[in-house]
Length: 116
Image (cartoon, rainbow, N blue to C red; front, side):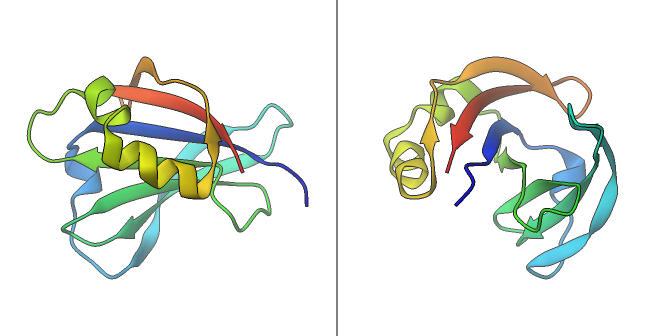
């Protein structure tokens, strides 16, 4: 099985992530290109209660990145190292410590580089 790098980002609640809908929503637009030049797009997944956005690149069916939205004004770095999120990550990937970042324009975030 080929190891795929996965990027997990935790950001403050963003209006674009909070739209209601089914478990998988429409593609939300261009997310740039990979180092190999493959096009990537954003796709809304989850529910209105737990919204998130995945980044799909090239012909991969598994997401290259996941953006998790937080309710209120939680600190993204604190959320990225919380016991509950650490437990979740341990079940799906091996991740580096979080790094502060900005996503979706200028939304504060914590980014973790992960491998499955």
